[in-house]
Each structure stands twice: as structure tokens, then as C-alpha cells.
Length: 353
Length: 280
Image (cartoon, rainbow over all chains, first blue to last red; front, side, top):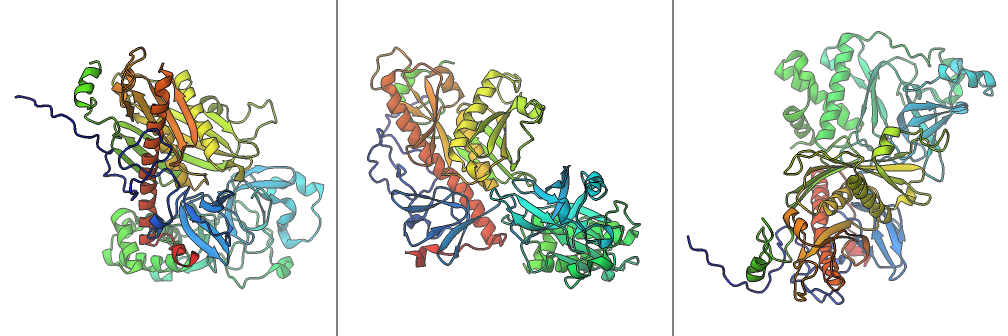
């Protein structure tokens, strides 16, 4: 077969199918080489960005000096510009411009309800993994003593610090204070907070991520499981930590991490803090309750897999939907698994697709 | 088969049919591992790299007892770059034994791998806003699945994508690209073309360099040249590589934007405010 080699025409521009940068090969002032279809060697213009859903690192957000820079941005002095440093959506608060990243580690804020795991015990405090860049700390003075006694923490308490929390144990707490470097200080001085037991832990993306826990009015709530025909308890507790750590457990009336928002506050601590709040022993959980806990976990997994937000409304609706689906199919215990195709159906039903 | 430079001079086509300024096919994905903080997969031609980012998370305890107490297994195999008052960036590269034509396992303590690790770590330390995360470690784990030239460039680009996915703030995309020169050392051929984005075979034959820039600017963050090259050619090679970096930045940016647009469409994240209209 004869092979003809044609003389090359003018060198072509690089394969362009992948990049549609929309630049009109204008002057490349200082480059030694002049490629056809050159990308302009400056920062991407604002003009090109108008229709985009997100901003990406290095993109100029504005050159207008009236704006102030917030999280996810940085400024350069010459020329004055605010430039994005993460990929995410833009948000404006008065004159403050910030970029919420598509996904990032949890950044603690005062008042957040978080679920955490003890990773280290020190002399007067615990170090808690809350999924943030730095470990949070829980001082000995920021917990309730068993029996609700109000007194100074003595050396005796320091010596038996592991009787309260020890390594690997889970707790629900609130962010009380932030240090300059972003590390959080937690407290559990309310009946809503404390050690977690009788349930299952799961971790999903925290706030700022696609399909994760979102900050909502209530992070902890009680789910009614009587519709599923469970005979043991009729309720389970769900705690959606803002950091993306989730705890689903059997509901216990008037104790510990119960979620009633109108529950007893700090004022009634004396009479209500039981002596067994620091127990690490699980109660016996009826099989039906365990099944519903597993189903709730499946619902949350399905929500995350399908990129939906995880909050009280979605979990409650999703749970009811899952019960309906299970009843319709009559698969028995197989109905607990909500991955793949079934999870997709559940998510579609929830958003009405 | 030696790279026949005389053939190149006739047709101006390289062994794989590209012209001097063609990039190879670039394909990438972000968020490939759901459990990781950030992850990416990048193919530049037949060079394929997977990247997983963990962190920023609290550094293992240092100082205390003897210094080397914290995580000896991790510290021996990864190269770290520290920033003043900021996060430490730890890079680990694992090369699959199947990634080259002749099956050869490179150990993690291999000098060559350590050199790559140090190069990536230092370049990233300059681009990331690590000062926002004091006392933390950002662990970048890279897995080489297939090698066909421009390995360092591909590693840098894959880690940039994964770090964007992890939401770690950075000045701009850190992108890297290789450039070579068609005539070897000694040939007095002044009109020799620089080549963009070398494949494995060309890397064996020709002098080349890897250049990393911050976004589509001329700010060089990484420059590695391990072969002999005439100094007169250097400028042309760097200019071509910097230009290639601009194109790669556009390609990476497209990958990130597509993912972001998809997430907004699916309602996973709230729509951003339309700044364009009322900002000006």
C-alpha cells in the first residue's frame, strides 16, 4: 500500500476538544512562543464567568474596592482584586464576599452540636476527634459530674478521669469556644449532651459538602418508628452532628442524649443527672428497634449517595418512604439495604423526581 | 526503536502523530473516593495517576520523646514540606509494579521516588494557603497506575485536583507540563523545535524539563531538568511548557466546574449568588 506523506500545513493549534477556554487568541505579549489559539496569560476574566455556577481557585471575583474579603478568598494589592482560593459557590453578606467550598473539612463554629470520639486523655482534659482540622478539647470542668453535683473539679476527679470518658468513646457536645487557630473547646453541660450508647455511629460529609448534614433548626430529634410495626420501643433518637458524624440510637425517656428541645436545661441538672450517665454498658435493645436503627442508617446513606442534604425533614420523610417501600415489596429483612438502585428510587421519591 | 528525528523533520509529526505543540489527551475526574477528604484521577495520555488527600488533620505528636516517635511507618516513606506556622504537607507516591512495560517494583524508599515526593511536596507548599491550618498535616497520597512520560507533571496535576476537591485554599491551580527539544545535545541545529508534553519514548531520547506554574501565569513554582540541554534552547522549552500549563489549567478548571455545576444542578449545594450583575 503506498503511503503518501503530505507536506504539513501551518502548525495546528493543540488539540482543543477538551478545553473551551473561550479566549480569542489575542496578544501574548511577552511569551517567546506564539501558539495558535493561545490561552491568554492573565487571570480569567470576569466576562467569561458570568454563566458559571461556581468559582474556582485563582479566579478574580471582583476588582471593586468596596467589597471585603471573607473565607475562601484572598486579595492582592496590585491591582486590588479579590480572588477565590477554593472551588465553591459565592456568598454575600452585606459587603463581605466569601466562597463556600464544594466540600471541605468541618470548621467549628460556636454553638454547633457535634458528635465526637475521644482520641486522647490528658491530665485535665480530653482530646476529641470532631472531623475538623485540629482536635477539639473537652476540659474536665466542662462536663457534668454524675448525680449533677456542682463543685470544683478536684485532684480526685483528675485521677479518675477515665471513669467519665476514655479513649474511643463517643459523645455529643456543643462547641463552646474557639481558639485563634480554629481549634474548638467543647462542653457537655446539659442533659442533651454526654456519652453515647445504645446505638450506631456513622460518618458522612459535614457542612460545606455536597450531600451532607446541614445546619438546621434542630440537629437532634426523635423518630417515631411505630409505623413500621416495631413492637419494642416506639422511638429512636437521631443526632445529626454538624460535623457530619451521626448517631442513631434507641430512645430512652428522660435520660442523657435525649433530644427533646424543651428538655430540662442547666437549671434542673441537680435532680435529673442520673448516676449512670457515664456508663459504657449498652441496655438490651429489642430486635425491632435494631432493625429500624439499621433502616434509618440506610436512609441516611442513600441520601448522601444521591447528593441530598441530611436534615430532620429529609430523614423523617425518607424513613417513612423506606417503610412504605419495604411494606410494598414485602422482602422482610432484605428491605433494610437501601443502596444502589433502591437508594436512587428512594431519593427520587423524596425530591419528587 | 529510536526516535527518528529525520522523520520528524520531514513530516513535523512525532512518534504518536502529534505536532510539536499538541498536548496528549487529558482526562480527569474528581471525587473518585467517597470516603476521602479529597480525591482525583488523572490521565495524561497513557500516564495515569490516582490521588487521595487526607486532612488537614492534627499532626501526629512531635517533639516529645525523641522526635521520631510519631508514626514511624508514615514518616519514613513520605516526604514532607513544612511551611512556617502552617500545615505540613506530606506526600507519598506508590508506583504500581504493573505501571511500566517491564514489570519492576520501585520501593517507597527508592531515591527516585523520594525525589518525586519532595518535588511535589515543595511545589504544593508554595501554592497552598497552609498558614490557615497551623499544627496540621495535609497528606497527599499518589498512586501511579501507568507510566508513559511526564510522570512528575501528572503527579502535580492530580494532586492539585484532589486538593481542590478537598477544599484546601490555594493561590491558584498548580499545574505542570513537560517540554523537550528535538535535537540532542551537541547537534548544532538552532532551528530545532521545542516539543510539548513528552511521552515515555520521547523522554528516553530527548532532553526535557518539567515546569510547574501557578495557574496560567508565568510564575514558576517547579522546574526540574535532569538531562543535558543547551542553554540556548532552555528559554524556548520553558516558554512552550508554560504555555502548555495554561492549557492544562483550563482543562483542570473545566473538570472542577463541570463537577460544581452538576452539584448545583442536583441541588447538593445551594446556588451561589449571582455576583456578576449587581457587583459592578
